[in-house]
Image (cartoon, rainbow, N blue to C red; front, side):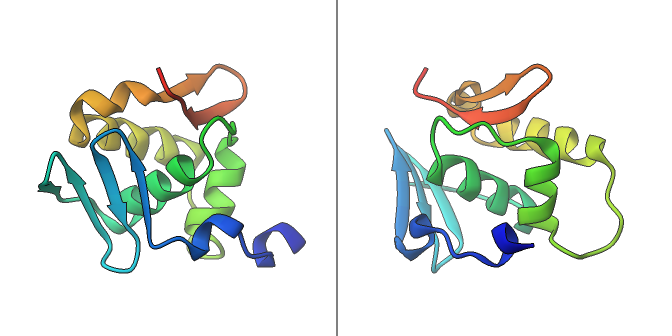
Length: 110
């Protein structure tokens, strides 16, 4: 419970970026090479979480608690489906969202 209520230092930033992938947090916009990419709310939140904590491996449970919080009952496989869709939408940067078998997901400088 304390982890969920604690504020992240990364949430104070206005934008997150990696190479030409730019996440504008206040405007809820993602651009790649200046072209806007349309993401769902959950895909945006997952990308923001992973990009804002590069190198940190998040388990499915951690992602569920941070992105879905106390909403409806969500299966672990929902994370996998959203990650797959997110990888496709961000194209060449999709390879930076790495699966750590048995542990979870992280964003790496590949």
